[in-house]
Image (tube, rainbow, N blue to C red; front, side):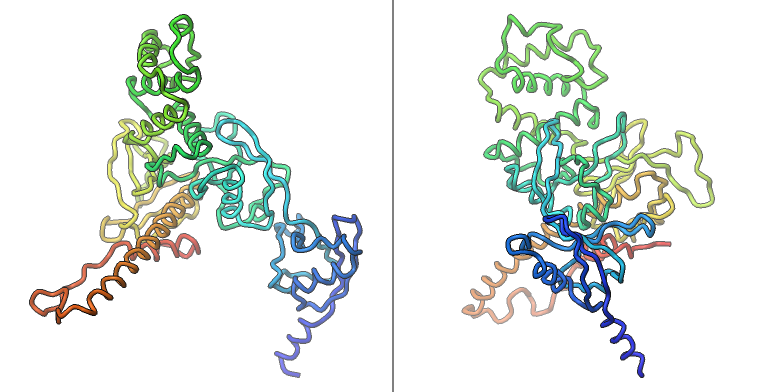
Length: 451
């Protein structure tokens, strides 16, 4: 018997599996060929169930996690086979609703419970949450676990293209729904009060917690606007020095300033009549105007070939990631030592606590740093590049539409040689953005290894 025939027989071999039906608390034993599709297996379960108890399309087959093998839980794709998931005789699957409640915490410290499709990727779950809580777009938001007490590092976000189960998220966990990227905040939409409120709360926490180091004048201006948002118009009988809780209105460096409260109240008087939405919009615009706005900093140590990293301050650097560039920053002076745009980056890799960035012809050698948060940095780079790619695709579509219009116009033109003054073809300058596809491929497939 040929090898292919043996393989076919093996895939057709019947397996006996148990299926727990959560709706009726019953366990069904079914006998199926190994190459049965998940869709057919679901039909088999539904046919065995009583009318009205089958569950319909909102139900699916779930493969529970296996602690012994380390296999993570997974919803089975209906187009795949039992064999694809390594399901063999003796295993147990679960037939249950794909939809479940997820409790999320927003940046204003309120909590909401939303119904999600548990089989969806984090990206799709985030989009669904945004729609359910009234946001026009949640493309720059993400999900993560709550910060640990005293945590000062950049938060670690869940991978957008994986499910929650693939990332070991338990069903009873409370997750934080917050802004992850800072790509299009210039277009603040006052017509969407809830989105504006979330953005304001995000920025307020960043200012008070010191994520953005600001001047005394900035601190005073932010506090005055916050006064208008929290307390409304100035009341001279109430709003006097000693009234403010400095811990919630000022960053740490200015909380012991004995003069600043009087200056805050003076500026607060000038905001009489400014309504809540306009005040929040003004606060957000002021944050966006900061030179350091949108930068996520990662504490690193510079790696030099042949030199062992030490704990000396001289080895420490900050790597800042923005929507446009990657920055190398002196941690003492906060001055930018050097920066590179995403167009200049060829690839990157993360392994063994080292992140290596390849800027091709724009740098003599690779930039390599030691970092505890390499995975988080890599995910942030990948997310910004994905956003740039999406924007580029949208722009290209507009350009294609316009080009088609121009071609239609040119078809009735008598110009025999448009686009060239002397009949000689002009050399085309290479577009650095073409490298984005290459970078994105490396990022999303983890094939961009430099070592």
